[in-house]
Image (cartoon, rainbow, N blue to C red; front, top):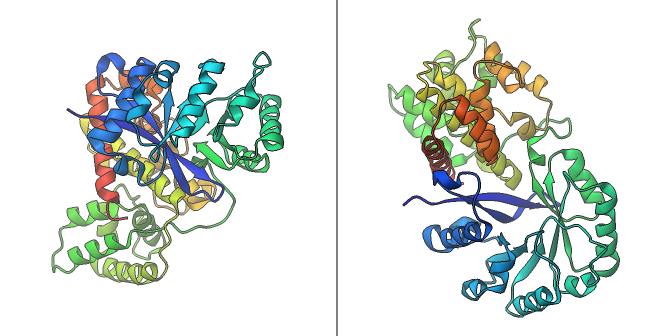
Length: 412
């Protein structure tokens, strides 16, 4: 039986992944986006510890898991390792003496405790007693009013400095900066998908991928399809190849519609020189930032989803759909405005317009890949219906794309 777990990274001030929140995902049609909260948590824990393995799920980092009142008060925590799990108390759990007693008991066992989507309630008089045992407070930066956030921040900084403030649903770089200046030390959300400061940044490349490509290039007549597939697995290589084509005197007036076409346009001799030079440089300067890696994972996931959808719908130009997904986060990877980057790449007008947010034939595929990468199931449902996808087909695409990304990244 196939099992699924959603995993959203939690970053620190230096934009390093320090933890994950584990999210319920299921292939079952009846519970596609909605499921009983107790069942969802149990499913996440069973899949994490038994089916997949918490070491693989968390990569040695702590995992935040939502707990309802029923599960908190029950025996479930007796079977969990405090070293792996942060117990995240959901916002609808009432703050009572009984809860505080249970939290104190969990702290004795070594668990760390987080309050999810926290808002101060004037009717609750026992926060000070509760906060003694709390390690993290998660504040919703998308929907919480500024004054409510400031009240929480002031109370924590003044009286409970041991508590780490975690800003969740951080959607923009500006929100991230505001949270940092407001005393938050942990961050969760999609802020890293937005353009950052105006400067050029190189994408860290997978050095082993260079050697795989060089191995393929040793043949007198390399397999172009294998070469294209190998290069497609690395966003850095794909970008540099397209930039090289754009600046090359060999470039024709035609637009690049696939990595394979780019290889043929450049020529194998020049490709060999290019790969060797990049490999020599990156072997001496390899520092893969967590933020880059998460962005590249998401970009590759979207690319594979777009490609699979295009193939399902018998699109002959499925390679173009792959490129749309692959370069969907290039502005965040390079920390530069998207319009400036696209001017430097030899894309067709349709690819560039789709990535820019325009309305093209590719747009529903592109938007579906974005929604699926964010596990935005409401949008996935809507676009899935538009694309005539069954729930089973959607989850198969989700699973296949994840597997492909993991296979690509196992060498990082």
